[in-house]
Length: 362
Image (cartoon, rainbow, N blue to C red; front, top):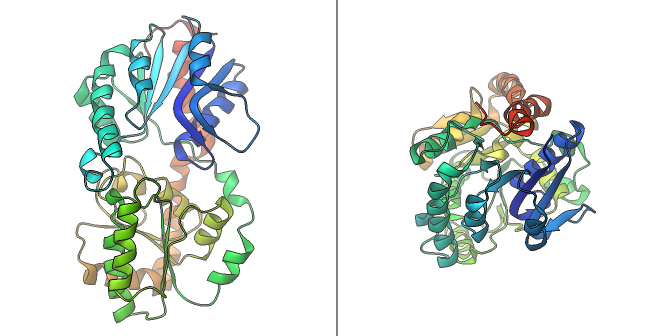
């Protein structure tokens, strides 16, 4: 069988794209396939043999199978397109540039460039894998071979670790905890979460707490907008903005949450929704991008962003115990789609023909 290289611009702890890369590496090793990972930037704390991109690209044999994780505009995208090797693009979606235009010109340019690079890549790959039908429709419009839609690999075993004890104590004071986990970014629309939370507190639960957990790195002006909006709504004592947090803190947030709310207007998948399902936390979201596809038959999917109406729904989600019991059963059923072994086998079905003879996957 061919040797496999996986390339991605940055590999980091806790990042969904990085987690999938590591899981695919473990899958290939289980199957007896020699494989390597290479990245321009390596932020892993664990000891792992990740090659530097500049060195790795010199070590590739023309027969090696190349897997490339694409989620940003990057010079590596053009390099990958030009490779003569059999290769597979794993598309994690690129957030549209207009969300960043007011806040970070570099991110805006990266998004614009990335979509152009993606389109130019269409005729050069042997196969395409993506994590949602929403993403697949983008690729098909660009002329890619019919993509294989396979959910992202989520390391559920990691979530069984002990949560941060300090955070657990802080959040176990009897107050209602409303949670969002994800990057603090314009496409995530945290201001809309704040608006509905303000209504929820006024009408139903004045002691409720909102946790907006996520890093704002590179989008500090947007974070400042959110911080000022918290002050404007007089929510300073009721909103936690922890910034970049440890994995153990994230576990504490999920374990103590009564509901998960996401008002994002663009998601190519949405790993935190699945994480919330794992912890039995009911989810309310707006129907944008791949959100509805990710949620399946669980959660509450809104077709509006009316804060008063959303607050009423949230109140029902938090306090209707009969509904919560039924919802936990629905979440458990949806989690079957994301079982690690099932996802790994579907990835293996795509890669095996390419590993054997280099023909295009079907």
